[in-house]
Image (cartoon, rainbow, N blue to C red; front, side, top):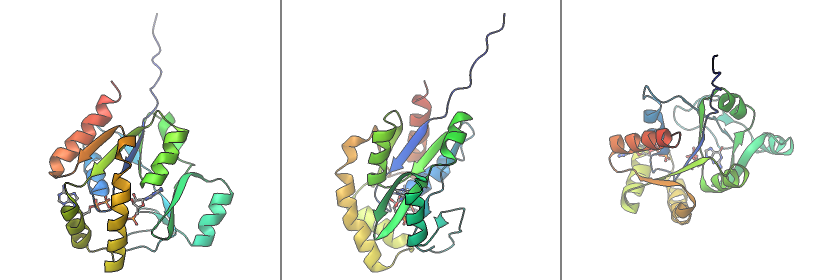
Length: 193
Ligand code: ADP
Ligand code: 5GP
């Protein structure tokens, strides 16, 4: 008699950490690994696109009013304000991917991560930590995407964010990029064992 193996549900993975710590860089490298099957949720934001960012690829860029309409309609799994702008995770696609057995990665700031922790405590919470505050400011400056006043507010915010680190399951200090990528991939795999 055959045994029917039910496909396992995907894992919800929350990746947070201060702006400039390397979250996007690490996650995009993790996705290149052959044995990783994950989808990164595309957030909605009221901030303006910067550099080469594209609507529907990097974010869904909307006005504050459009974002607020989405809040009223209950379209977000979580949302938060960061540097005077809204950022939120649209609900619609998450369950679809998880039910297909594909892991879903949310790259979100700390207030949003704590909302997810309340809603879905079994999710995996990974904090990407910069090797030092000096290196963090260097990365924010060298990235070249933000004006000096925005860099300062992101850097100040980093101190508050780092205070919340104990609420995460894992902390990865992003010093050597390759090692950080291997660690995040290993954590994702280990979590399924
Ligand atoms: P975040 O998504 O956390 O805001 P990014 O992924 O945009 O951060 O990275 C910020 C900057 O730091 C980018 O210019 C990126 O190329 C660089 N960076 C990321 N990880 C490392 C690393 N391990 N070593 C050196 N530079 C890094
Ligand atoms: P940035 O302006 O650098 O793209 O993003 C600013 C911060 O907002 C980053 O920490 C980023 O991870 C976070 N962020 C991006 N999307 C979301 C989201 O959907 N929800 C929350 N809470 N934070 C988000």
